[in-house]
Image 1 (cartoon, rainbow, N blue to C red):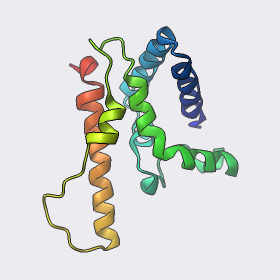
Image 2 (cartoon, rainbow, N blue to C red):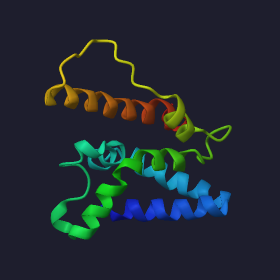
Image 3 (cartoon, rainbow, N blue to C red):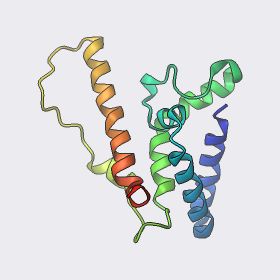
Image 4 (cartoon, helix red, strand yellow):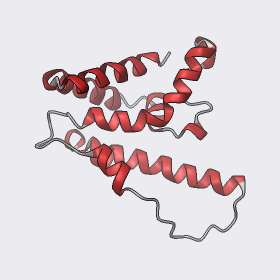
Length: 147
């Protein structure tokens, strides 16, 4: 039902605070395998924006209201936590800095003027950001194993 992803994130945060590098490497391998399963629902959940969460991720009929609220509150962190886990990927020659890049350097630059502040234009902007996360995942975070 999707809660296993949150449990993996909790384990990751504990391992990272303990600086348990062998376990972090194993966690990165597990997460890489999850991504490489190419399950659309999982990929959408791990890269989704909280505003686009409807229809993405665990089915609400299998979760309690409390569990669903926990998932929604953590959704904003999900992509950054996924990036953090993949920073410890053993196939990398040196440890990645994906979270730092996403936080400090990545910016959405608007090349086409979209003056309208309509709901449609906000939706288009969210979709562009979603596609950026998917491309970043494939081209940067999973590049060492996909090639």
